[in-house]
Amino acid sequence: MILKTFGWSFVITAVGLALAVLYDGWTAFGIVAILSILEISLSFDNAVVNAGILKKMNAFWQKIFLTIGVLIAVFGMRLVFPVVIVAISAKIGPIEAVNLALNEKEHYKELVTDAHASIAAFGGMFLLMIFLDFIFEDRDIQWLRWIERPLAKLGKVDMLSVAIALGVLLVSSMTFATHAHLHGGAHADKGETVLISGIAGLITYMIVGGLSGYFEDKLEEEEEAELEAEEEAKKSGKGGASAVLLAGKAAFFMFLYLEVLDASFSFDGVIGAFAITNDIVLMALGLGIGAMYVRSLTVYLVRQGTLDDYVYLEHGAHYAIGALAVILLVTIQYEINEVITGLVGVVLIAWSFWSSVRRNKRIAAEGGGDFSEKAEVSTGV
Image 1 (cartoon, rainbow, N blue to C red):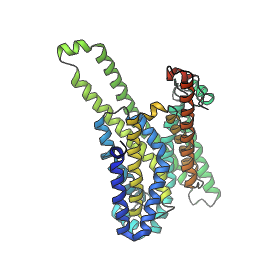
Image 2: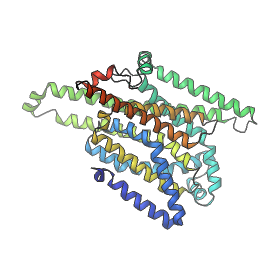
Image 3: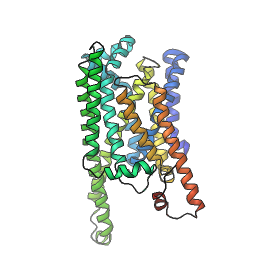
Image 4: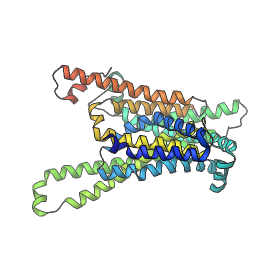
């Protein structure tokens, strides 16, 4: 099972490390290895969240996620994305941006750093909406009941998550603009950039998440209708084609949602990589290897049913998303070490895993029964 799921990750690791040695010797080998570990540690929570979505998709779309999805993740976010950032922020052509990345690495790093505010605002808002929509939903299984129960009641207020997200964005943009004015005004115009980028992140979430949710709901309705009319469908031989088509639409938009989610998660990894190297080739190799492991880990969690056995993992991952969203928004103005960013996610997921293990042991000691019902009265701590 391990070899089957992680086989391609092992192959990509070997190829990537070999290319690093050929490119710039054993120093490059070490940098790529460090970047791979950085990406895995920063994106472990991504794998848990992705698994919660991917388990609703069939084997075909899981394969698409591991193939085409990896190409998008590696070449799109880890190679093309940094170049696009420079091209847009510096108002230069993509070819010139690539030339900067390869030949003027310090200047390239400066341009990417200069674009950090807009990147953080976009990614922070997207991730914040994911967290808010999760925490405001009324759930049978609750981890930190003392927090989640009252927030679930507040979540009955329509559009509350959007209102809170916009409020946070407004405060962030005003604070950034005020700070810039007080310290020379070099970035005073970026308060508006932060606001526009954050709104773009919010719109992206609402469009992609909305379409994904719509088709997922339609798929569930279709499945219920099929169960009710199963015997009639067998006699007439109808009813199968539309369900397959609808499943395809639902899977496509969930796949699209996964890719945007991965893009938002990868912001911190891409930005953090500049603390280690300015070489875009080494960044692409290291972060690409890490992205492959995150993909494989996602599929492993789905096939092993880990989220069903350890029910608080998904909660921990979403709390990590919330923490990362806050960190990204804070980094608009203040620098935060990448080690802190990575540790926050790891600690929250480890805590949720430990809580799940304790819950399972407690239920086993009580003689089993319906795990979901017993979880309703569990605090998870």
